[in-house]
Amino acid sequence: MGITPEFWAQDLQGYYLGDGELRLRPQDLAKFGLLILRGGGWEGKSIVSTEWIRKATSIHVPIARGPHTSYGFQFWILNVQGHRVIEAHGYGGQRCVIIPSLDLVCVITAEPVTPEVLPDAFIGQWIIPAVEGKKNE
Image: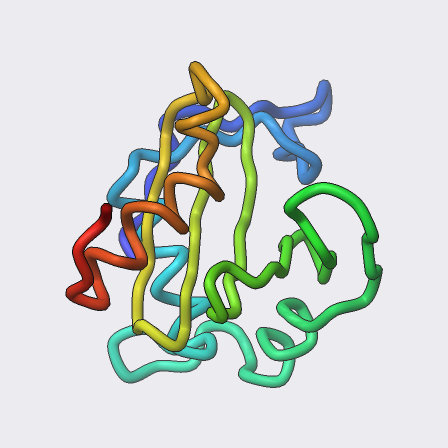
């Protein structure tokens, strides 16, 4: 896929950490989102099985508080304005937002500064209406 991490921490034996400390360029994070959106395929090849993508982005842990309503395998699954939204969160505000019904991948690489710019509010208030061609009042 041509993804080269900007940084990926390793343990003392040289193994890459699987629980975090991976920094990707926005273009590479978008490639990851497209891989998920396309069911595991990249340039005509299956990179990850469609079945695993389906399971990973399915609800496994329902959560009854806050904007994040459910959790899959390292993916948040929520509903924003009637759209199923899949999010992968990373360190420092990195987010890969996938909205299959809009054929959309959105990458965010900054921590929110105020509640008005929280990623989920921003997506619901600005991104979805823009893609749907609706004016934001």
